[in-house]
Image (cartoon, rainbow, N blue to C red; front, side):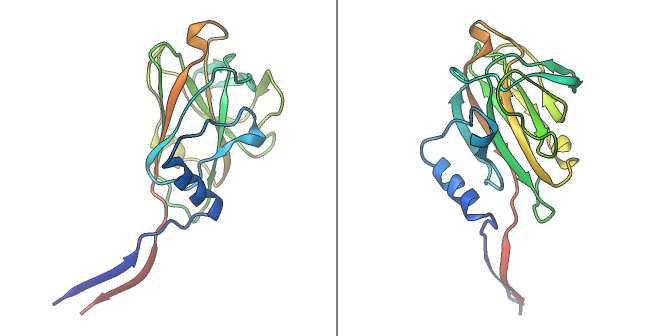
Amino acid sequence: MRLALAFLVGLLCAPSARAASEALAGSPRVGGDDCSAALDLSCLIPRTLDRGTTAGANDTVTQLVGGCQGLVTVPGPDVIYRLSLGNQDIFAAALRVVPAAGYDVAIYLLRGTAPGCPTGVFNFATNCVAAANAGGPGVIETIPVTALLSLPDGTYYFFIDSPVATGPSSTGTYEAQLVSLCPVELIDFSIE
């Protein structure tokens, strides 16, 4: 018996997401300084998404009203990424941020539905769905796969922020990582 498999492993991503994935193979880009400029992370293959800095960024969100998994105050400068999850996606991922040694990073996701991603600066957000702030300066923060799998379809905004308002640990360089499984298209399969 001969087993013949012929298939194309291709991401079924929108052209803009595929272009973003290919662009990241070169020099990384920094997340947006506001929601309208958020870098789209949808359906990217497992990889380092971005290496950037929050230095010089504004503070879009200052407080997570009601807290979000223990995270309440985030007065540091933040950068923002956009992530879309749909029912056709096979999405098993963890979002992880590796900060520089002195940078105290906090990460969180805001739902894209009303009230959505805030505009301007010094906002209070009421739509946080997942967060991580386990440690101090230099500690890797991760939003685990279990948190992401429980989210309904839709658009989310991923913030890289800090629980520190000023000083050397309030801002810094980081590496954002996403491990995801995107759908593939089966072109042909036969068993002879």
